[in-house]
View 1 (spheres, helix red, strand yellow):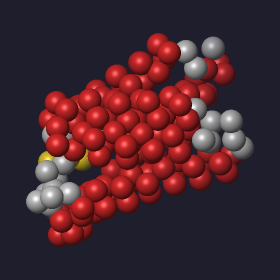
View 2 (view 1 turned 90 degrees about the vertical axis):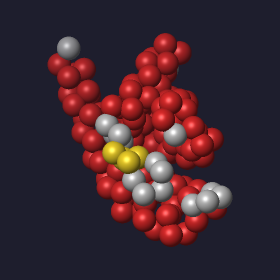
View 3 (view 1 turned 135 degrees about the horizontal axis):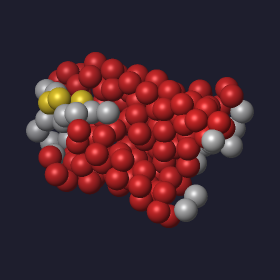
Length: 156
């Protein structure tokens, strides 16, 4: 994967994260960045997913919610890395790894909120439904985007 494609994916994650920002109780926000993170992993592999997911999402948090940026860097980076493990894989792996990736995102933010000073377990539970919806959107949207890209690139 060329470095400039990874930079482009990173910017796409940041823009998708900033484009739709619906605040949630814990101080974070619902966004569509996970769609691009899953796509980045499937398209570019684990390294592209790691960099685009972690850095793109953390940059978006620096603009709106800087206190979450370090947590986001790790969680979204892991999400992209795990989704990217499916790139060379067979069909069932292209479903399994992105599914594991979004579960990591949900669990990571749950425990991150729980352990974060001034948030705690109540906020972690309050944010859980939103994070699950965001994970589902990321999984299905990222897979759909990758399928569309694959079909378009085969006809070109």
